[in-house]
Structures are given as C-alpha cells and as structure tokens.
Length: 238
Image (cartoon, rainbow, N blue to C red):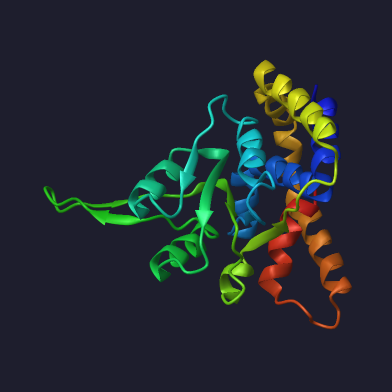
C-alpha cells in the first residue's frame, strides 16, 4: 500500500526519503505547478559511491513506470538526453553520472531543464529545426556537487547521501521488503494521487504563495537568493 511504501522509504532514507517522496508527488502534477511558477526544480542526490543514490532513484522512477531507465549525463549526447526526457510528461526521469568538471554546454543543458527548455537541432536533410521539451521531474545523481556554479545550485534541491549506519542484515531486510513492493508494482500509488488533480488545480497557487511567504519570513535576513527559496518551496507546499 501507499502507507507501507512511504513508511519504508522514510525509515530507510530518513529526511532524504521524505523530501524525495514529496518531490515525486509534485511531479505527478508538474504541468499544474509549471503553469503557476514557470519553472520546476530538479532534485540532486550526491554522495560517495555505495550510498544507494542510483538504486533509490531507480525505485522512485517505478512510481511512474514499471521499467527502469537511468540516463547518463556523461556518456549520452545532449540531443539523446533531451529526446528521452521529452517523452515523459508528469513523470520522473533519473539522470546519473554528474561530474563537476563536465563541459559547460552540459551544465547549461541542466540549467535549461529548470524552465522547461529543451534541446534544439536542425535536420540536415530538411533544414527543419527540431525542439525537445521538458515536461517531467528530473532526479540527478552523482558523487560531485557543483559548488562553484550558484546558478545551477539555485535550480536544484540538493540532498547528500551517506553510508548506512544500520547492520548489514537489517539493511538487506529493508532492501528485500522494498524489492517485494517493486515487484508487486508501484504505479497504483501514483494513480491513487491523481484522483486529487482537480483539487490540486484549484488550490496549488494559493497554497504555494502562502508557503513562499513563510519561507521568505524564515529567511528574513536574506541568506538565500529568491530563486533558491522558490525552488525549495515547490515540494514543501504539499
């Protein structure tokens, strides 16, 4: 059930799990949110190898699709990335292998995902310009953090992952239970949320504005730039 899955995820991943679940719920209504905000944040899991970043991203994508597809930010062409992302609407796409020293053109591509910019390409045969669009939630994983690019940071919700302090047997039990839920299918959880779409459409703007005011009050001394505050408010106004 939804309760069992959410409880297991938050028990396994703590606050990171809760934030990622809220992000997934927001992704289910991404088009509604984007119509109001004109942007949709990305979520970024970073940490050492072996902390379960990619495995967690794989689990969350199964809320939207039974088959898992993890895109590679380092090895895929930007057009291929944009084309694959454009195939999804109100779903979660997972992108792995972020590196802090990657080409600036790839960094610019990620920045564009925030406001639904895609990738343009001219057809060599017809001369027609083709454009991909971004209409889904984006989860990026990697061992590095782009700490020298504030513009990219402000567009993302950053979550650091750590080695589990649980015993090996306890961790294995958690993963076994989670795998059983995956095998049974998780998309019914998403379907159960979609019955609230009309209420979401009616109430999102007012609730988001209220949450935004509250966040700005918390940051009354101006420690964070406005775009970062707006980015973090999207999953928190649920």
